[in-house]
Length: 392
Image (tube, rainbow, N blue to C red; front, side):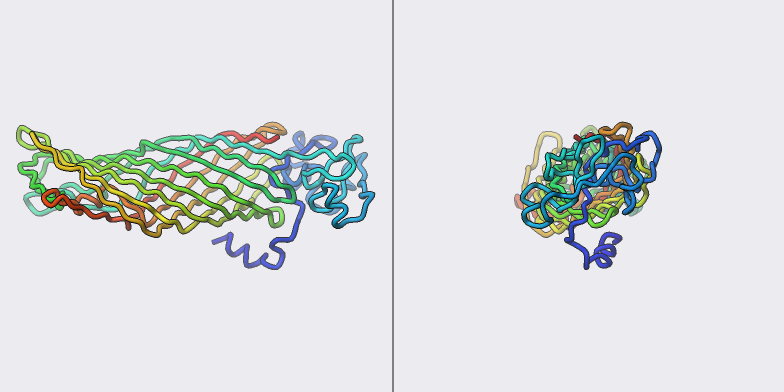
């Protein structure tokens, strides 16, 4: 928990304005921060790029002077627009604010908006095992835990609005569907016997296949604030949805039987996290992000079965419970122009306390038209992302 450790070390200074505006873009200094790879800066994204990381940076920039405010720092100066009471930096007769916001004397604001558009590619791991069929020798012939899913892709969009002084509001959304995989019997020890596939016998099964298809969606809105030049804290509200379909198809003598379960999970709640920048070469930064929260989960399951000439169900069940959702990622950003960057990263998502399709078959009884729901399973997803970021 790097973020929590950093919080403990920095608790004394948390909440103090520090002048870092994470989304402000640089105006190139003489020689150009984008001509020299690192240009002696700790980051080209610190403030508006006119102030270097150390206190002597202004002395290193040619033909630049600090314009002291013509009104005292404090409430009067704040009312005139300088969000942190910082002096303005003059370059080529243009006043620019280190905090990226407007201040007295007609200072030009820095970048206020950022938008990110990525392709997110995910696959599922660690599927909870559930025996579905057994062979004549007593061995497990079909188990949902043997499924390995293929990669599926979807969009991830982010929008950020700077509030100055290292503060911002950000919103993010992503959706990845078609996360699917399958496993089947090997033909040995047939015919197979169902294991808790509802209350249907399904006789004379010669071969069978279990398939699963899942979809994850997420939307979040966060308030974020900077601490120093390396840490950005965030807190906000998040919605996560996990939907899945699991189906067992069984080839019997002269017939095809099947049983299918659909589940849905809607998670709502608050989250807390942070972003870290741990490697910086001016145009190129590498960092990490971690978010986690406790959520209210509204889950349902709907199961149906089919044999030649007859259909059973669907039978529904639903329940609410407390669930967990966490996200961890490593990311890299390479600025190719003053306003456009290429992004790449690797991501992990973990849901705990959710309903999965394979756990519902045993909880359905078509004879009594009743069902319950198991919403205590986990889903683990991982994958990579790549895309672009623009700031203005």
